Image (tube, rainbow, N blue to C red; front, side, top):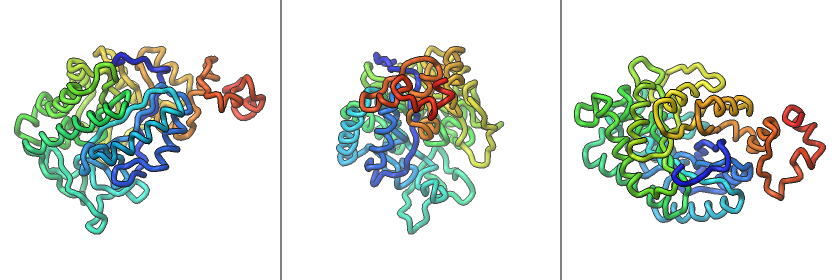
Length: 361
């Protein structure tokens, strides 16, 4: 993709850590990301990173819109490059009407007045849920500001040397909230028909494509369905993916949900893979599958069946940063161990058969 070749088809999905200070990565990010790099995935994609201060979900979210943040990211990337050879990506995001919230372990509710909240924005003046603040509807100046912020953050990511940029167009955050009729009730050129609701996400993608190098990877995480009878559908996702392909993006990661509260999703192994498979079937884009991909044989079957090109694992890598090494053992292949850890390979450590009897058998 984008003139680059990933070492393998398992990548670390963006996972918010809510541990930044003023958008700046901290020691937690170094150990978290460093451990993942050592495990040898094809790419590690950093968590949702705000393109402006009011685009963060919480006070603990990463951001990349000022020089202090850029300098801190430069130091972080230098450390990560020393720990692994996989590509390094960053997910650029704007939380929209879901911004200004507490961290999940603090309940995730909107920030109270004594918690330094900030104004939130959206496609329409519709709060995310009962008791949530009403976002300001973005006017022409606001739309231009947000688009320019995505471009500026992409320029910073380019200077920093990131190999990949992923635009966050899912989970009810700003770009997805324009796409979904559950959150977009506009009557201008950015609302109403699907063509209009996709207009702003596509304008952002086109603007970032114009500044992001052709020899690096550019993709978008999109929503395959809102899981709501009045929400966006897989057919909408296919239309969006085709337009992103036309604009020159390299891939889409197909997720779902997050656009409205109270929706119960029946979760099971690979429950979102059919959404990815539908997009792959109807476009020429590379497609990442996400969601409850856990077992190596399950993961390999998704690739072998042609349902997806790449697997983006999140909690699987949180649970086991060495997931790729152990998957290779199960599948009879060889994983890239760094020399410092080579003694843990099954061929060199008899204890592997005790620690990982199923993999080594």
